[in-house]
Image (cartoon, rainbow, N blue to C red; front, side, top):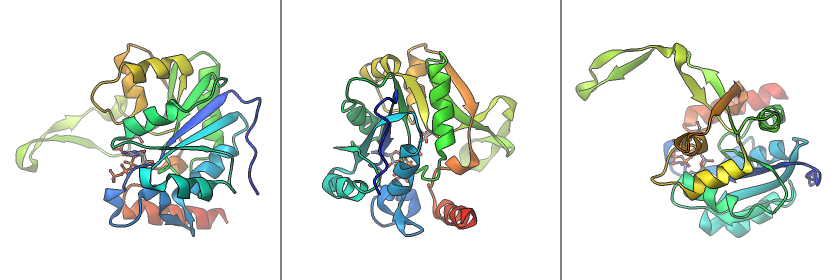
Length: 231
Ligand SMILES: Nc1ccn([C@@H]2O[C@H](COP(=O)(O)OP(=O)(O)OP(=O)(O)O)[C@@H](O)[C@H]2O)c(=O)n1
Ligand SMILES: C[C@](O)(CO)[C@H](O)COP(=O)(O)O
């Protein structure tokens, strides 16, 4: 059954899903690889559609897969699908251009974070609604971090107390994200980075272990176990 989005919602979610998944190994574009029998993108969109604030979802798919992705997602939720770009940043920009008038809050969420709970979507959106210009979910860094130089020789130990591992969805006041992308230069790895370059304050909220980014084969195996455990 198709999950209906909320016509009174104030959130549009952009889903960059056009990456190859090189680190996952050879195969289909990563968003279309299977997790418990369904593509990662289906898992991700199903969870986004379950978040009550979501009004619109725009997916940036691999250019050759736009029709296939539209057909894949039609039974899951009403989504707009656009061709992505060569870099994540270009994929987000393409999706941003397709957002209709209305939503005042824009979230950007990796398809690769397929198990992100709807509650995290809501907590990021709520922080923007409460007045933050830009919001990122973060987790503390749990390992000791070393800086290394040539030949993998350790240069020093980094103070990790001020470090955070950053997840998605990242949330923005619409005008803030639009201005940041309009001013964007060389590609950055996340949208908060673009906003930081504009001098906008980026605030943190607690992330979720379930929002792990499926990047390497171990992550996919871990996600399979998490899903099996959830029943
Ligand atoms: N040109 C690109 C590159 C990445 N992404 C998306 O950005 C998200 C985060 O990227 P990552 O997980 O690093 O995916 P890939 O770029 O596919 O991974 P890899 O570097 O291993 O190829 C993913 O949902 C991915 O599909 C995208 O839409 N367009
Ligand atoms: C946006 C992101 O998922 C936040 O952690 C991350 O920056 C994507 O980077 P990647 O190198 O493309 O995985």
